[in-house]
Image 1: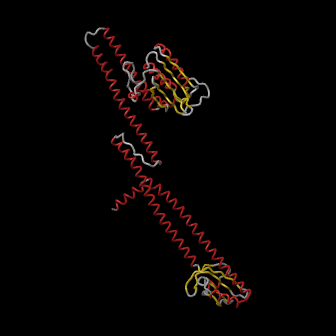
Image 2: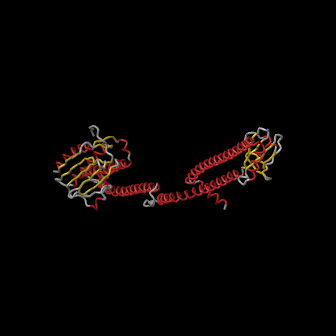
Image 3: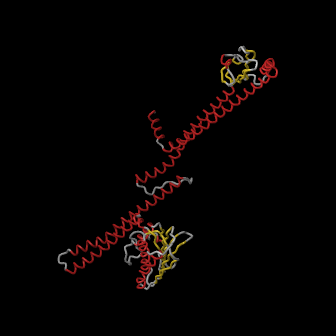
Length: 470
């Protein structure tokens, strides 16, 4: 039982939430104690000051009676004060003659009272036969007698004791609330964190990448953290699926050319093969190996782009000038296919990026438009800066047959090809998408009826301050 209790205490104390809450609560408790102490001493000081002024005033009034009516008048005034019912239980009087013998009063004389002079004194006395504690002052009268006036401090002590009890009760309740609040805060925080930990355990131990942290109704810091973690898990799942798809696609697409290469090698190794047959086999094998090298290079480029390693080469780049050079490069190809290739621009459009990669992405989009739009197509490359959306956009539009919506969701998959009759490896748009992600740009597809458009939208374009060269 004791060991279990100790383990529970260690677990509670090991909680960051508990310690954090406890530290802040103790700070608040200490602040409350300082305020209570200040209140206590200020209250006691005010009460003592009131008692002091009251005693001094009474002593002054009694001295005035002596001055006016002498010793008999003072004795009569003391008897009147002791005989009324106003403060008779708390007022203290003692009149001593010049030899120190008591003449009147309600307290017993002693050596301390006999030696008391002008200054005030807190002293234990006998008041009407009972022990009391009072504040006393003395006045030496002209005839040599001494008047001692005081006030019972019982009320002050009771008020002080009451304040102490209230302060102790407040401290005890506050301490209990601090511990209870720290425990409840720890429980609440632990429940919120436990959901995240359980999901992380399911993903890490069991590999269940489809698991997500449930979203709560409160839009607090944990909700923001939950959304960020779920977004991260979505991205991880997407990347893992991409890796699986790439692995499967690479295995599938490499198996066929490798099989052809192996079959051609076996054919070339047959006895009696002529020189021409060997030469044709070598040419065929060289072409197949070159295709495999291109595919490998494309895959390595996509992996490099997705890793973000090229970001360090980013600098100011003019999209309109890059697009102009690409269009000029493909004008001969468009003319050969009897296609029309045009460029429109709203003016200088600058972003932060890699000029070579941006040129490669635009070239891939133009090349795909020329391939799939057909002979005699009209292709328009638009570079614009949308001030309202704060975006720089590149749009490549053609008037070709377009792409069915059911097939659009597969656009950008590695090795996916719409038309197998058109030469290619199915890695062009995958490369464009990787370049777009590297530049934090969005990749969008739209059927224009007739035709098709592909756009890249770059956030936070730069202001072009001077002409630049790509």
